[in-house]
Length: 231
Image 1 (cartoon, rainbow, N blue to C red):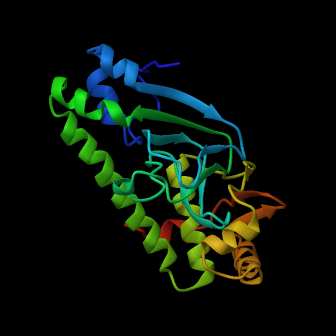
Image 2: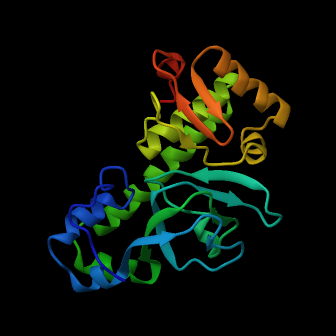
Image 3: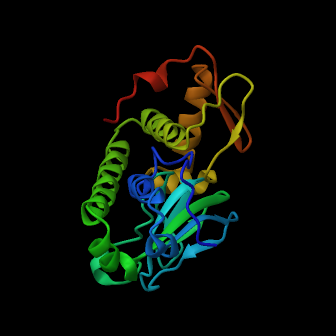
């Protein structure tokens, strides 16, 4: 269903947020027809697959998406507000598959309509460039996380980035499910499974987090996550 939500709750974090906020009040028919909003996909389903042709600019609004190579190895994650790029757009096809790590919600803007929209909507090209700029900034943010040398702090940096991006604060009794299984998370963070388990245990011993099987929460009074800077 192609609809626009003028007061979308994700607009401030979404890479398409400015485009939607500028154009939703105008009700430009071509824009409305080109935007597929609030698409919901279940966990473990594919948004797009490796070598599939680019057809749209997809932006994640809710949940977490895994980017996997042709051998199903995890190579990255996408958090809310980020563009589901899946590779170099100049190639014309996705170099990764996008798999829903959780139930997700996303929006799609048809690539084939971008030029036409730029001819009728002022500053539309500039808005699209901002979408890509925001995506590049997010990738740099992620690379900084991977460069944290100590395993415990690298894990903490990932958890902080995840919580901030998803807008969730699992404190007190509020447990949330880990977005990835431990094997995937270890591969993503460039460490062995045993090293990841030790990092989790250290954070638990320091009373920073509480881990219960696949669920996690931040413990009240912990300050490790507030001390980590990824900016």
